[in-house]
Amino acid sequence: MVLGGRLVGAALQVALAAQLSLILPAYYVYKATTYLLGAAFPEDVAGKHLAYEYAKRGAYLALVARREMSLREVGDVALGLGSPGVLVLPADVSKPQECQKFVDDTIRYFGRLDHLVNNASIWQVCEFEEIQDVNHFRTLMDINFWGHVYPTRLAIPHLKRSHGRIIGVTSNSSCIFIGRNTFYNVRPYSVSSS
Ligand SMILES: NC(=O)c1ccc[n+]([C@@H]2O[C@H](COP(=O)([O-])OP(=O)(O)OC[C@H]3O[C@@H](n4cnc5c(N)ncnc54)[C@H](OP(=O)(O)O)[C@@H]3O)[C@@H](O)[C@H]2O)c1
Image (cartoon, rainbow, N blue to C red; front, side, top):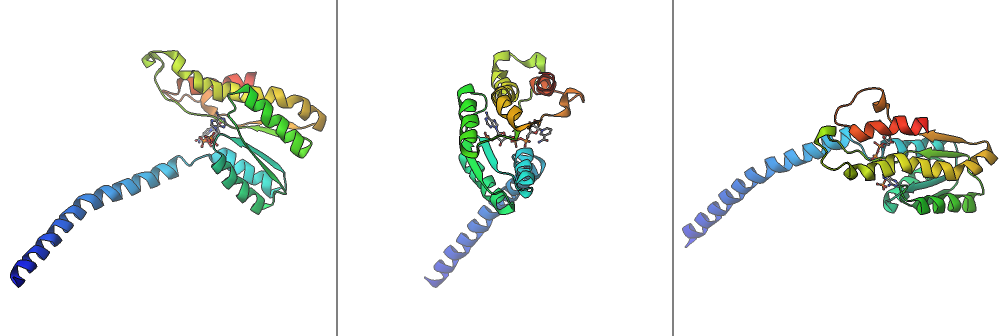
């Protein structure tokens, strides 16, 4: 009876060790990959850090992006860094009505607009000749190009009043060739020339 119990216990230990030896390497590979990807492609690098730099200099901030939770996290840090007031405005810059709303809300709340920072972008990679339907890249152009044009056009009257500035965060990919970036490469040139 005792011997039987020991044998079952030993068998269970062997089974557990076998399972761990299968699961643990996969788990460590997953952890290492997510760590390396996180380090190589940190989320919202430019927008977040620009907001923090403005906050350190005592600026009021109107933060715009689609994910409200991320905006609130950035807003909390910005307040801690010295911003006297943060307005969180979840919106999609590729939609003109939403751009109109966040510009209007900013003016209603703060009474003025001094700087507009156009930063939003997405990245899609594909060799031009491999594209079956160029319409698949409309979303990229809607965000990376029109998503900079709409807010700029709507902000201009307010920026003229405040003698303000437009800051465009784009990319040097229009002058340095980066393969497979097809439509992403078009944006910096088209935005800076418009
Ligand atoms: N990372 C780089 O190596 C690199 C190099 C050169 C230039 N840049 C340029 O720097 C800028 C920021 O790049 P990043 O790497 O920081 O990008 P990111 O991490 O992907 O952040 C982009 C930001 O844009 C927002 N966004 C995306 N689509 C949007 C939409 N339709 N409406 C409103 N907000 C939208 C995202 O928030 P939601 O998803 O919540 O909307 C996110 O906060 C871009 O213009 C990029 O081209 C980046």
